[in-house]
Length: 89
Image (cartoon, rainbow, N blue to C red; front, side):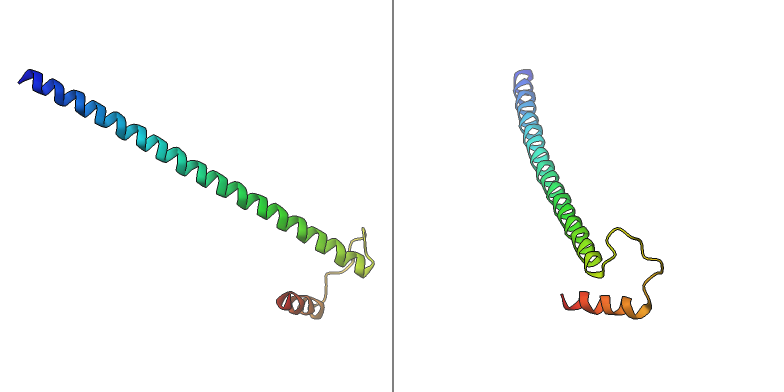
């Protein structure tokens, strides 16, 4: 029976090795997928921020206030107009 137990132990070790190897590969694959997804989202956010900055600069240029801070916060009616314009875009 000791010989049979030895074979079972060897098979169990081989099974465990295969399981750990498969689990390691699967974990690495999932991590890489998540990492790629996060990097893609960060790149998209960067692009959107750049577009937003460009839009703000374009609006400043249209208003003729390039480089000069606004002395007063926008009035409520101006803010409402901006919201209307954003909603239609």
